[in-house]
Structures are given as structure tokens and as C-alpha cells.
Length: 121
Image (cartoon, rainbow, N blue to C red; front, side, top):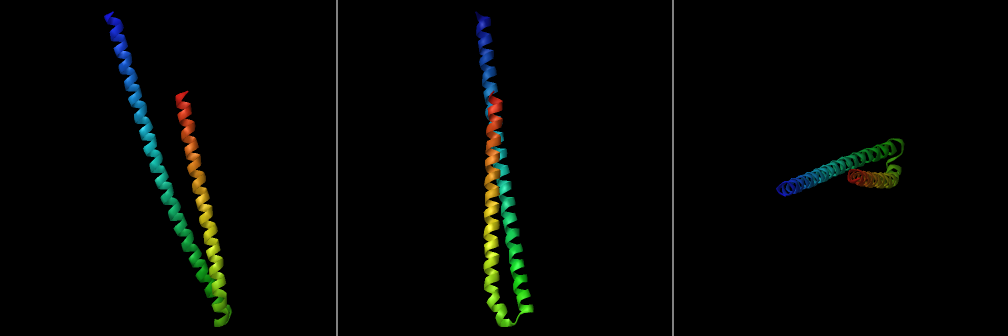
């Protein structure tokens, strides 16, 4: 009788330890995932900043080219069109970056779900 009680007690302890270990692993995974998402978001923000800078440089180059090849008045007329084109390009790049970020986030969530399902089986 005592042996059975001791056995049951050991089983309960083992189950508790396994549960604690599982919870700890899940918490660590969640923390890692959050860190990864933060890093990716920072990278994407940096990428968007770079794209904006590049587009501003391209816009300045366009304006300079207009000023060199045309008269001052023609360049002044062309500058708003160049600015509008650069703004449209910036908007398209931002949309593409946002879409890429969304896809990456969804893929990561899907991968985490897959891993959890595999661990449970």
C-alpha cells in the first residue's frame, strides 16, 4: 500500500516537473518570437528610411538634371512633376515593405503553430 502511494507521489511530481518545463519552454519561445518580431520591425523601419533617403536623392538628381538641361522656368515647371513621381514611388515602396512585413509575420505565426502541433503529437 505504501509502495503504491509512493509511486503515485513520484508520478505526480514528475508530471508537475514536466508541466513546469513545458510552460517554461513555451514562455522562452514566446519571448524569442517577440524579440525576433521587434528586430524585424526595426530592420523594416531602417529599410524604409533608406528607401526614403534614396528617393529623396533621386528626386534631387531629377531636379538638378532638369535645371541643367532646361531653362530655370522649365525646371521650375518640371520640379513638381518630379516630386509627385518620387512621392508615388515612395508610397509604392512603403506598401511593398508593409506587405513583406505582414507576410513574414504570418509565416512566423504559422511556423510556431506547426511546431506546437508537432510537439503535442
